[in-house]
Length: 474
Ligand code: PLP
Image (cartoon, rainbow, N blue to C red):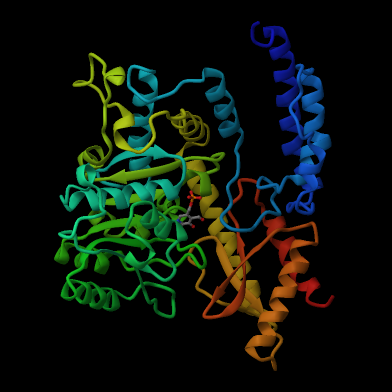
């Protein structure tokens, strides 16, 4: 009754690495977007589990036979949808080693290296994006989780003893109010839902014609809430919004947060890594005034899912909100060490910092920055092609590596343009060559292309543009 024999593990492990190497090498032979219909994959999987064990050879064969059709290939250079999340070689190797080591970093004692490598990597990454030394970092799975912890910290800072007494059945508690722009990511509202703030507790502030939050409107709303007896407690500003990658005016927002004593959280999940590039350093203006910041290496730093970094100047508040230590988790060194379980909702933790250690060492900060810089350059080039084509128009400024555009051959109503672009968008994605995503800006259907894959070369961007133009004639 033991594990797979070690020689069998070794043999199939080599086989699997070969499979992954071939997959990455030949990835362009697949369509980036899976072409299956709902339920197609489920039908291929037996309804009941096998009673007796199977040969691992069979399982590996079935990866090709059963699963591959249902894969949307995020590693494919034709994948230009959402924000890319690509797996680099060193990232994949670190994932494999993580599983091999199988450690759980709930306490310092449960693997000292876990806590200490995470501390070191947070220190490296903090320097990479130019944050001051008073920022303390921790790794969570996703930006959604990071932002939820930011909102929880903002709530804890109010000292309304929510931790002990909860939020319900207490007449003395005012309505809590938080703020973000109309373009903030849905994870902010989800955080509010999770923490009992409710969707009505999130006030969406209008944006200007560059999709940036308007500080004057924010202040109006905050004052209005104070006058109504509500309690403003958190503002979420975004650097790199999901639809257009716009940047909220952090400096002015920070001033308001200071004036009204409100927690400022910056969501830089996608764009934050661009701060590594000296010419893009301006995006971090006034970040030192934020209480917390999230940046996701799993979006644009070639890190396999998942890895989100949460920085805060106030880790003690996070600990105050979440630390709860039962007898069986006490250790003799608790006073000397950091136990990461104290800083969030989860007890068990995956060894994610290993991916950063592999990736940052393999590429170096210069290597990572130059790849990201190249993506921004390619995006500007693509934007120029769109701008120079009579029948197309850019729909938002291009600040990073995402381009929002639409087909506009003239003499069409807005409704006709929406229909036309929606059809073009469907044709593009079923071309089997590229996969784009869409958004709506001021009720206009907009096609959105993101360059951020470690496999993106100029030829892929050129090809994408040719495909898009050609499909307008079909
Ligand atoms: N914040 C922004 C600005 C995003 O664009 C996204 C996802 O695209 C998120 C947060 C959520 O990221 P995650 O999937 O890591 O929760």
